[in-house]
Image (cartoon, rainbow, N blue to C red; front, side, top):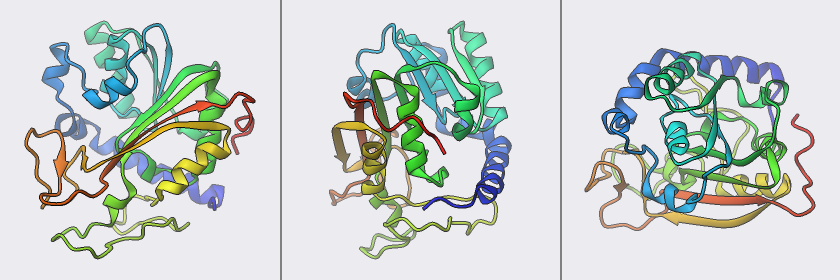
Length: 267
């Protein structure tokens, strides 16, 4: 169930302020900036294999942060547009695009405001890694995606598996540390940001209800960051629970259904 619009405006503004404050730090800590400047993609091999043919296609990157992944897709031939709520992150993305001479468009916007600011349809709508917890309404999100896709367009996401959020943060126990199923009230324990928990069913059904067909859903026993201190990594990129094979990350590809229904209203 979606919250009151006034609540979302307040919560979204608080989250935006947090991302603005830490934009430069996130650039240093999350991305391999040196590799990117040397021409290497920041997008991992899994995503490159799943979205192997982006040449000549219009790609919209939702919640793009500093835009390195957006620019990596541009290097592979896509015509890219990146959108993020943080003006500081968008400034970094625009600067990187200029420095590397990679054609790209970046917009600062709450993604739910896009119908008022962004025209045109996209071959690919893409989002990745730590994005869904910042959204309070996945049904609205699904309708937004459907509205922005061409009739033959595809949507792709790589995201932390909802199960991973239940892990105890101090030691490995099969004891849920937070809810798996969605509740309307956001998590505000840090006193600064607002986040929401979504189940895998919430994610899949929001896209189906918006008129998309799921082409694949893949689950992995590793993830893209060290959520808890007892995760280990061999390469500094993928993190695992030693001795266990539990769902920590997923990828999903969906395509507009033949009737194209479901994306007309984003409200």
